[in-house]
Length: 422
Image: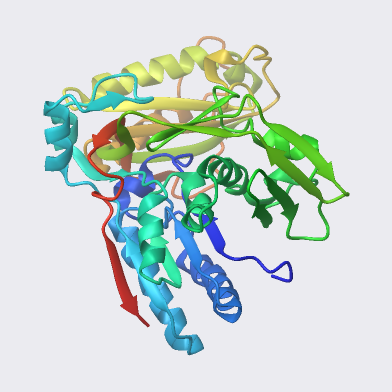
């Protein structure tokens, strides 16, 4: 704060943790941590008389998560005695609105690999869209001191305030893309803050901590982060061209960036993210130390899976095994599957009900415990369980039902802004 920023902006969400938080409405981060960090941010913002903007709150930015986070802001205002104007921006999309867009041919694939269908929307429990900077600018127009926004394009959360103040959108969005991961663009990288200062023809990046520095290498490298094409950065209603960018070291701590160019797209598309309930999951975690069991493991697991599918037929179950210490992370892509002295085994079962998933998981773990296979030496104790009970119910499982782009008439039509005085 000694660097005197004009705004505090935070990207709080991602699809990296998968669709669970979108489908369930649960927060990615605990209320304890959210409240603790929001308190520090809001107090700093009010002391400096600058706005605080948080996008994709709760991790997925659904209305449930917006309401939950706004409730925490109200508690903070009451407990600290701060007076502020709170804006909330929702990003949930009515299913009927998405269905009309599908019927009109106004939805295209993004990374789903298949068209969005009416049937998929019928199964969707939560549907959000990524807002651009425009709804956040509308909240700033309304005089908001604290903005709690639903699902938002990562860079737009950071770019909104400078664009609102008249900055070049290309520079602001490029700056936002680097800043949305905080000090990941510093040396040594960390999960604290970066400061961006935008000028007419450039922006300058500097770490908020004196323990770090920005370098041409760290900043330019982060311009490549999460990017399929190193020169193109797409977003709601625009595409940024980074092919002419340059990076200049200023002193030991700062880097100046120039060259980003923005082209508006003919139509304005927003990214849809939807989640559907896929079933319920139970798991069992075990270790295998017996060398003959490890050597015969693939055949054992094939037999156990086939036996479980037959045992519970006609009920459908999904069975997966994760063998850690051998190929638990890479699966069939692992090139060096040399067997170790011990391996960790995760048995995962998904079914239509939690009761069925638990029953199948227990059947598999119990069957493996005493499974007879060719070459067996010890007739029992193939598994070592670190937990009792050995079979753990994980709960509902969600999968993405929508990961597409939808055409909209205006940048703000789907993202209503509400204002309240605290």
